[in-house]
Image (cartoon, rainbow, N blue to C red):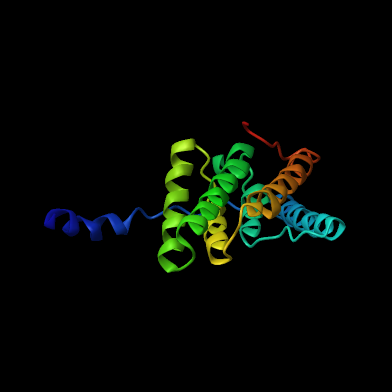
Length: 173
């Protein structure tokens, strides 16, 4: 065990990365436009339906969907599955054990474990689990706002990432 602790400083150092290649302006501007459209679409549908559909983790999902849409973490299975798994964990945690710091931490950890096991890793899912437990989410949380919002973002991503010639989404379902 002592040997493992002694190896930690060396592992932390990592490798020095070469300079980043510049992001083309058209890509960055399209990320801006797409993410604004995605979040505004959630607001618009929320207004039409009368349901609150926006949660903080959708901002992080937007970074993946519109900023690094080639990432495996941004693919539809990961977006929808990651949020769905995490919301379900949050609802079950609240129903079985209530809310609190331990429940919130466990929900995030369990959500990560289940996303790993189901191949639906989507980092904003961890925030969805945390938000759900902190808010004392009930079963409806899974459908509204989580599933509805994720599907709205997916629809916008499918359109905006394919309407221009320099993007293609998804890479896989």
